[in-house]
Length: 453
Picture 1: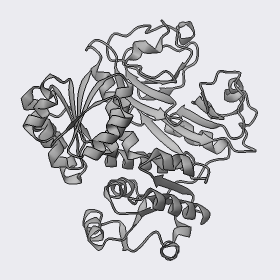
Picture 2 (picture 1 turned 90 degrees about the vertical axis):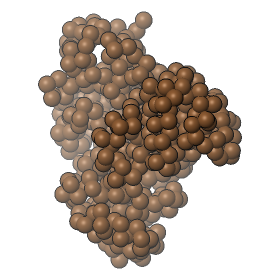
Picture 3 (picture 1 turned 120 degrees about the vertical axis):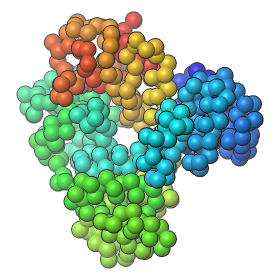
Picture 4 (picture 1 turned 30 degrees about the vertical axis):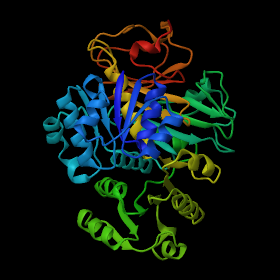
């Protein structure tokens, strides 16, 4: 596909890298020559120096002949103007990054008025991811499918865990039904395990099941952590604003520490039920005075990756049950991975997953079963795909044991009539099902791709 991307910042670079890796023709537009140089040096993409909101620049970038225009600058108004101009030039599909809560609340109206195909809000997506993690404190990462009816959680097998030395084909007889260990990370390898696979201490599991089944699983293996009742958030930016709204709506007490008096006043107005404190949350004495030892969860959301990691390590040392750290660069996540900080959130990655999922869906005809959502797991070495079978699809009604499913792919769950089914060999996939598949084969664009040629 021919794609024009306006905005070459951190998020633009990640999206350009992912889309170029998928084989698309990318043209990146920005008025910052240094940002464009970074793109040119790391991504197989064309670059154009200029103002992406300028009609003539968009025309020069070939927007009129493009399949898709994506605007992800730091300015919501610029992104929306880019998409509006792109529509006038003839592009059919447009995606705008919209971060401000006031704009985002009006998106149902604005999408139609501006002709937007998709509204991208990385901060809201990151807040939603953190809220899912706080619902399952035992998990390092949580991805949700089929409107929350199925979850995939990441968890490390600890020494002494009942799972150590257990063959997966014995799992159902030893522990609760209703879950599936879909992917295991071991010694830099990412494996889709079969029945004869034996779990070891240090393995990182990616487990699929309904929320209730996963909670029961954690209780049985002795890794269950109590629900979060109060959370301390460090930093009062957009993610804190969205996350505070989610948590308060779930009945969780929220305390936000922010060093800017102006931001504190905005937070007090937007989140009247939250406790907003003016102070430097990177000072251990401030965190101790504000009761970090009694917090069920600590979420570091400042603009500094280093500050987030260091305060997260401090919160872990002080005995906080669940610590979540936001980082902007993958390198910091890799460097801090050995410091017992298991839950990291990268907004740029969440945004890129949404874009890749949308673009793959565009590539399919109206009669095919495309991808509803896509999530990277295991440091990007595997993908989890959600398919909604609303029309004709291959191999429906055939027992899974009789299907030629790819060796690098696993049917992890089937959602049917609001129930999450962990499939066995005799189960079938039917029309109107939602199917969750896990694969180490990248580039799948539709349901038919899960089957061997």
